[in-house]
Image (cartoon, rainbow, N blue to C red; front, top):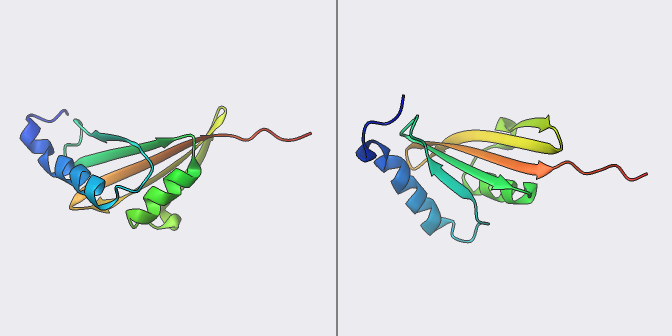
Length: 101
């Protein structure tokens, strides 16, 4: 179910603003406020698992929480936690390395 108003997304928007202030040194990411779950912030990183790790550590998400999956040509890491009172879903994508012959 989509959010009824922008006000319902306020906490997630404020969390995103706090992240940009506190963790301005982190690599750039795609940050989305969910319209399906208004209190959720979705953060995705592409092409670097090191960037994913930097974000995971900064947000205080434990490595034991990370779900690792392979998909055609890529690896996907996903972890969820809370920051500034909202649910945060962090997703990292990276190309699979080709085996050296």
